[in-house]
Length: 336
Image 1 (cartoon, helix red, strand yellow):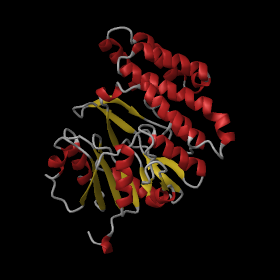
Image 2 (cartoon, rainbow, N blue to C red; image 1 turned 120 degrees about the vertical axis):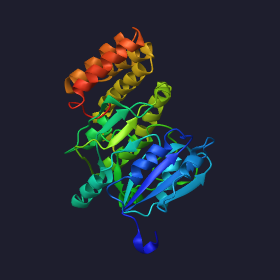
Image 3 (tube, one colour; image 1 turned 180 degrees about the horizontal axis):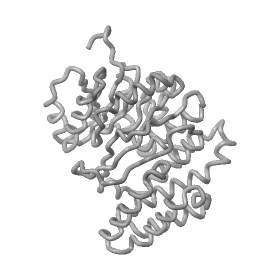
Image 4 (cartoon, rainbow, N blue to C red; image 1 turned 180 degrees about the vertical axis):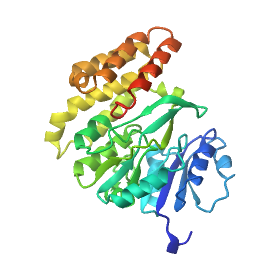
């Protein structure tokens, strides 16, 4: 692909020890009904056979960047800086897409020039790629800055397709590393939330979703057991980085957003089998801002009940959670 035929979409795929999933990920991109794209794979210091699996693909649209490990944000930043497309589609290497995803998003962005971030609902799959019957079904239209902050409707790092122009506007030099960044490399988690919040607070571009689930998000059971204290600390730091100049907004919505974040972490603790942590988190969420019961009574109360039930055998509470989540999935707003 020469300079005279620049791609419409740059697909950025960070890779770190994803030998089990990278082929399904790449195949889902190459099978897109919209074919005017480049694929930028950023190998972030993998030590397994990820590169061997990638090299089995013989497609000139695939570009490889190799770097020492900088984490997810660092890999995404390298891919974005190398992107040549009008739009940048993010895809984590353990997730995959429906074949029509790029067609939908390109049409959406082409026909809505005010939309900077286009996203969609996501379906959850297990380690084997089998649908779990649950997913993320967020609010899609007429989003406010409050919605972005409190509910993170984008949901995960494989759902958004973003205007390259917007990402260039959000570029900064990381004071700690000196790297040119879009995602903040000081954050090991919540880096996507920080970026969405930074974009929303500028009020230049809008977020809007497509009402078709086009992303398959893989639930990594081992990843669910990550330290929720560390996750919460990263979220707090992401918020702190954006307070200056927006004090009135945060004074109004910070407690509510914190309550939703604590509820989200409670759900992660439930799925990882950390029952007592889940109980403490949902209790703290309700104390922080009881309004989450009014705004989302079923999801909030179900989280509280599941936190208590999680003390029982894991197979029993997992079955109940999947039944309830299947019932409420079309009523939900994001994943918190």
